[in-house]
Structure formats: C-alpha cells, structure tokens
Length: 426
View 1: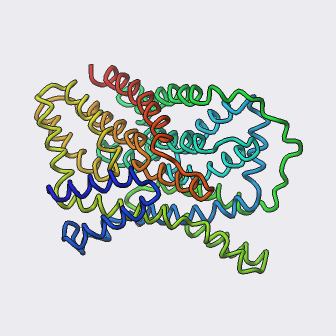
View 2 (view 1 turned 90 degrees about the vertical axis):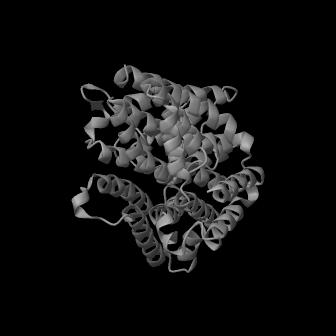
View 3 (view 1 turned 135 degrees about the vertical axis):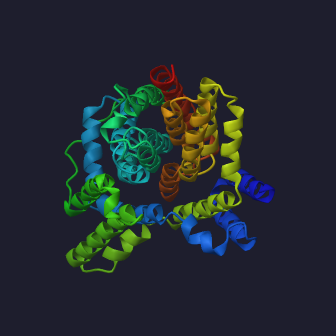
C-alpha cells in the first residue's frame, strides 16, 4: 500500500507541476502499476471506464460535425444579442451548461457547450480560458442535482432506493436538488465576480450566421435525448455499462456516413476523426489505471475505514468529516470508486451510531461531486475542457484553474453543507 501511495502522489505532483506532459506521466504511472503487479493483469479492463472513453471520443467527433455546420456561431450570435456585456455572457454560459448537466453526463455537456463559448470569445476577441473553466466546473456542480445527472448520483439513488422525484423532495423535505441549486446560485455570483472587469458592451454582430446543415445539430441533440432516456431505463433491462458511450459513437458514425455521402471526400470523414483528442483520452486512461492500482492495493478502503474511526460517535462530526474529506479526496481521484467504497461503509457507521444515514449519504454525494472542481485533473469534465483549450492553442496553468475552481467549490459546498445538515441532521 505504501508504494502505491508514493507512486500515486508523485505522479499527481508531476502532473500539476508539468502540465504539458500530464498524459505521459499518467500513462507512465499506469504502466508502472501494471508492471509491478500493483494492478494485476486480470483487473486492467475493469479499471478502465470504457463508457467514459467511448462517450468522449464519440462526442468529440460529433461536436466537430456540429462546429463545421456553423451552428455554434449562430448560437453565439443569438446569445450575444440577449446579454448586455461579456460578464453576463460568461454567467449565462455557466448556468446553461449547469442546466444541461443536471440531465446529461458532465463531459458530454462540456463538449457540447464549449464550441459556443469559443465562438463568442473569438467574436469578442477575449480570452476563452476562464469561460471554458467556468463551464466545466458548473457542469460538475449540477451532476448531483438529479438522479440522472452523474454516475455517483445514480449509485446513491440505488443504495437508498430513491426515485427521480426523491432528489427533489425526500421524506417530505427539500432534497439534494435544492441544496445543489443553492450552491449554483452562489457559484454564479462567483463567476459574475471573476468577470467583473469585463463590462465592455457586446457589439452588434449583424446578421445571424447562416447554418449550412441542420443534420449535425439534430444528431447532437438526439444524443442528449438518448442519454436522458438511457438514464431512466430500469436495471432489469441489463443494458451494457458502456451504453452512453455506444450511443455517442453510433451517432458519430451516422454523422460521418452522412457527411461522406454529402461531400464525397475523404476529409469529410478524417476531419471529424482528427478532432478526437488522443491526449485527453490518454490522460484519462492513465488516471483510470492509477486509480485501479490504488484500489487494488487497498488504499481507498483504508481511507474509508480511517474516516469511520475519526467520527468518534458524533453524527455532526461524522457528517463534517465525510463532506470535507470527500471534497479533498475527490480533488485527486475519481469519485466513482470512492463513492462505491464509501456507500456500504456509511451504512455500517450509521448502524453502529444508531442514526439515520440520510444526511451522511447526502454529505458524501455533495462532497465527492464538488471536490473534483478543486484541481484541473480532479474531474473528467475539467480534463476535457483543458484539452479543448489546448487544441485551440491556449495552455491552462494551475493558477488559471485554481482561481476559479477553488472559490467556485467553496461557494457551492458551504451552503449545501449547511442546508443538508439543517434539513436532515438536526
């Protein structure tokens, strides 16, 4: 376990220090975990989240078709006509991505909204880095708002046998949705403050950009609809774990075939495929292998047991530890294996303490979901957003991310932490 912790920590230090080489550090570390036996060969496939990898790859290709159709430019023109200045454009895009992410995977949301933000920034000749970071962290925030917003929400809903409506009202009280939305409002104020100097009026863009082809837009919004529908399919149907990824890749293939038949050139197929960011996929692959390694070595289980001991029988103290430890841990590791490990642990803690586990479960979900916003590599949506910026020629420093991600996280988690305790802990 000690070797796994050292390797894991050293890799994260290197990734934060040398941001340009993050994919290589992650893949190299993953390879070391495999070669040293800390991640056995028979567990490699299980460590890789193919659903996320397929979804990112498929959506990237689909989004490129969407960009080529000039629909993002038209949407940018429409938004620019509705908002008074750059500051409100940033706030609007942040809130818009959050709304979508309450029902669609966070990564898919970033891939869909980022092109619109980039077009706005090009038209206004302003730096797109804070725009994209705001979109990514807002997407992560809203993942806990509904049963279908994030994998961790689905896992918790299954553990508590919650319905979709239970996230809105649980046991006759306002549920997770309202705790998240309270944080969303305060987080929007953070975005508003960050862009406080961007008061310049948005120039009249003239005529709306003409969209050349509506099919990519139909396919992209079709992906959103199918992802929502798939999240409501009962477990008894036994859909594959990669269902979301299959949906995105299938629609991308449909788009490629249509594009080829329409243009009859090889570029019609190779162009969108070149838009798939292999560095982002490589970074995620390496992270999945690293997390699989520390999970196999018992690091995550040990952390969960340590948290249980620190509670000392006090429900409020236990709740506080779970929330803030989850924020800290999820800033560095994928929240899915952490939440999966902690759900049964919390059930056992609540049984020993003789208390209602609801507030502990909700604290786990809020902390684990929002913790990823603390670092540029704490969530797949952050990695994806930074990858998009890199392809556009913009390098994101740790400082760029921290000055948005950390205050955003605090503004979101503190009110949720207080409200959940008032509703379910007192």
